[in-house]
Length: 113
Image (tube, rainbow, N blue to C red; front, top):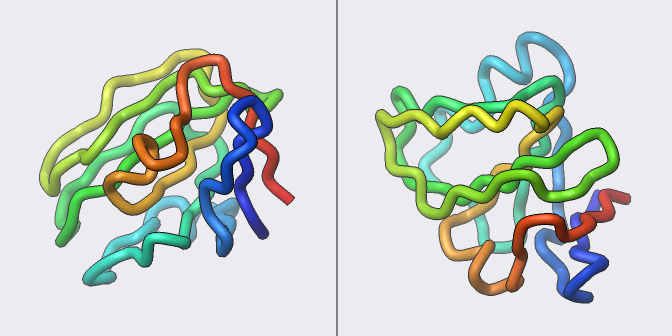
């Protein structure tokens, strides 16, 4: 799967994995040492994330049911929490710097295909 910012016409991630089961959502990126610049993890049923026991920082794009951006958090460090984005239904976790590189902003429309 890929993540593409339709509003900016920029590729966000070439390789997006889904975390849509309770176990996959709970595990997320735990246990990994890094995330490649072209990778992402889409976590469903999620409006905030924690970074407890993570080994690296990530960017997070929070999306509503229509895949519009409702929240952006750049370089969330290990052992921290994101804000809660009440309108979010999923989050796309990416390597740090991806939000800036893709030019993604609030209200942008993201295509996951």
